[in-house]
Amino acid sequence: MSPSPARRPSFRDVFAVPEFRALWLSYVLSGGGDRLALVALTLLVYGRTRSPLLAAVTFAAGFVPYLFGGMFLSGLADRLPRRSVMVGCDLLRFLLVGAMLAPGVPLAAMIALLYAVTLLQPPFDASRSAIVREMMGADRYPLANAVIQTTSRSVLVVGTAAAGFVVALAGARPALGVDAATFVASALLIQLGVRTRPALAPDGGGPGPLGQLTEGVRLVFCDPALRTLMALGWLAAFYEVPEGIAAPYAGRLGGGAVAAGLLLATSQLGAAISTPLFTKKIGPLTRLRWMGPMAVLSCGILAVTVLRPDLIVSMALFALSNSFAMYQVAANTAFVERIPNEKRGQAFGLANAGLVVGQGVAFAVAGAAAEVVPPSTVVALSGGIGALIACGLALRWRGMSPAVGRHTARHLGREASLAGRTPIQSGSL
Image 1: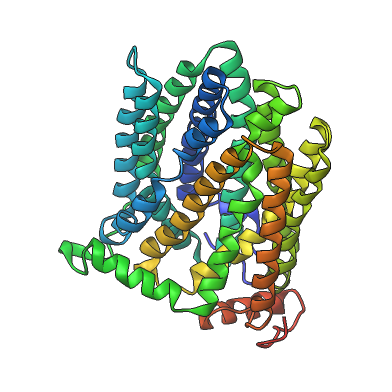
Image 2: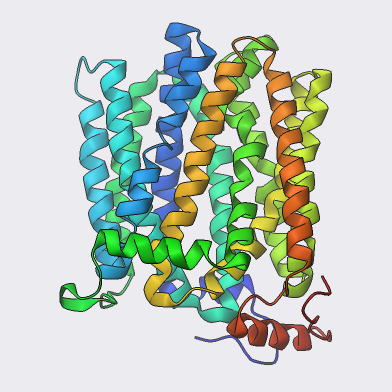
């Protein structure tokens, strides 16, 4: 089913694709379970140790292994059938999370198992991202991407808010049990609802993991536009610092697990609301023009926490900061359209690995800093540094064409003509 060429695609067109519905539902289930388990373990560690550093390191344990998985395992999405990669990763993660439920497992072992679970996330994410682009085509992909990002934010809102209540009322074990069950459900949905597609390098052809890694690094880092787009994505490491130190931030304000869950939830609420509106109502050329300023605002707003606001104001600031993170839809779409399909898995893996590892490092550094200065000061410093970097990236993007790549230029020109606009020429951002 394809949208009419006489109008812009809609979110209804996206959900009209049965494969996308199955993939979307699987993401809701497994993403919600993951968030519940990660937040539960973080709050459990903080509750037992009262250490902001250990809490942040626990939270980072769900991110740091992404570096190795992103570098060496994401290429599986280009060498093997992508549906098989997703199903296999889900089943292996079910076994690992199930091991956390064994009686008497110490905290250190749980964190180690969490590292192993995270190691399998990059090939799953790379396969999902690449297959969504195959399902949707160029016209509907920005909307499908917005749906995935909005769903991610919504899952974070519900999962993190629920995690605080679950830990407070029942402890971490029920959260881990839910997480294990969602992996099985996700694997079934993908196996039954997503059609198989042949591997892009059949019969073991093409380079091995190291060769793919080398090709991916060359592709991504030797292209100035791809470097800039990827760096804009990596800014999330700065404006999402409040997540990593939510427990000590809430504790300094006199709150407990519920307050920490609310801070984590509202930090995602702004983007959950703004992203679909931004993608549907704003044209593709305008989205590309606004990327830089919105990236600056997403970080700069956090500098206000230097004034040490109360819980309600902090929640509002975190939501407003993340509402400007909707620029990530435009950055992601431009990044995808510049990369050939047979190399998207590795490229996605590298970009996502840098983002996730950057977040993990930022959380750990923020946690260490929160040991000696107020958490509100740590958030303000992170936002200020991120805003300065965003200014440099915005200026660099101003000198580039908004239509990144020839295919994207044709696509943007077509959408701009539907909106009654003329595509902007190179250098006129």
